Length: 283
Image (cartoon, rainbow, N blue to C red; front, side, top):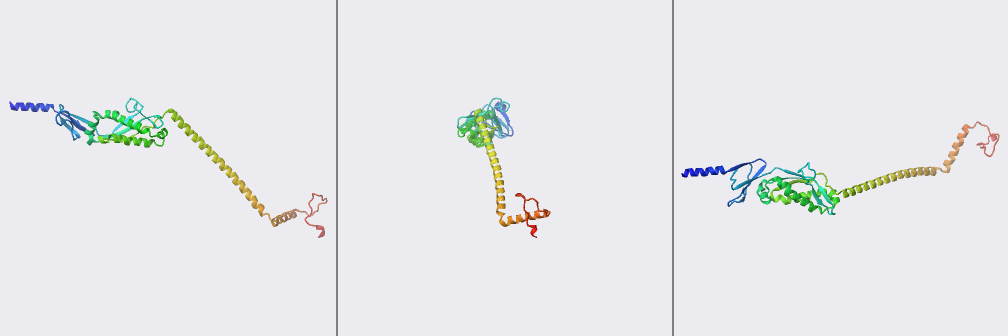
């Protein structure tokens, strides 16, 4: 009789056991729901088969490979709902942005993760608490930047600081955020975009005017240089016309005239008739 009772007890215990398989890339933790060990066991369960009594124990499984999330306005990306993140600049302008994020769970801290967030599945955590924390950090930090800084030179600094803050929020409980950034550029109000475009157009027109002025000045300097060169050349020529040079040129002109002269003296000599170079009648 005692043997039959023991056998029956063992059979009940055997049939009362349950098992599950923790797949590669996952971690499982045993949660005791009764007894002196109530709560999360200190050592997380690794891969493989796990046997447990479903009457007093539950096994929670989490992936440890990289998780990704895209929070965007486009229903074709991420979840079909509009999950874009909004934040306000220091000067009170509201930006909207599509954000992507990737993270993984540290297997050794899976029990701490469960106790802190009580997440039954990783997807609910990702698009619930994690998105909320990221959104809060975007909003808290954006008020330190002007709209022009968020749209331009300090955009990368801004999003990198948000990444650090989100990581600091989760790291003690096993969540390691690897990347966080904008999908495309943040979307400012239309009035701000119009103002920026107007400013850029004004800068372009101003630069064009400067270029044209520089071109005009360059042409003017070229003309001045040319005129100065000609004037200098004339001055050099004028300075070289000494009395001796002038006399020499006169002799050259007379010599050329003698070569062409036929020996006849003009019969009529008027006021405008050139006189002979020398008096031939005296020779």
